Picture 1: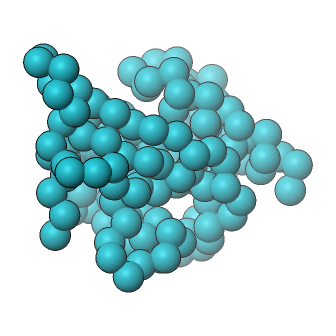
Picture 2 (picture 1 turned 90 degrees about the vertical axis):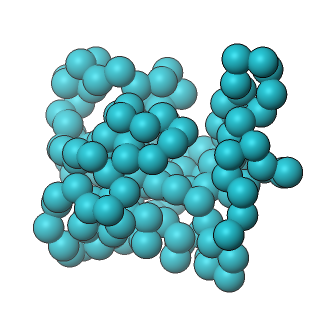
Picture 3 (picture 1 turned 180 degrees about the horizontal axis):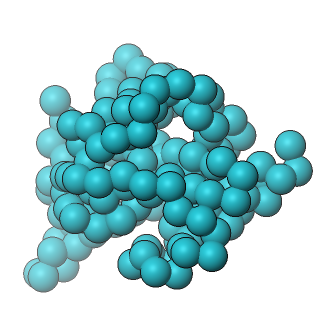
Length: 145
């Protein structure tokens, strides 16, 4: 397995913005980076997995749900440095719009909590600005399809 903390190179990760009308699924992270913080479901791509395979696996591991992967929303960097300025984590993230096609919503092995959040409730969650922007973009994409 690749070294995630203090990696030798950036790792590829995927994120799912799971839309259901005017709601989106958020998870409370059960692993670093960001342990305990709210986020969209997702994680690292394993060797030999396609992006879509990795995304469906990660969503299942974090939410118990099966999803249909739709359009790509954004490609971005997630770089976390330690107090000394050294890169502790570096992911290149590819986020997709997704919709639920099966399963039962419940935190699974990689999440502390999971919930549907209404559009007007997003402000109550401590999300990074880029995550909020990706969610907004996903709602626009979903509305146009």
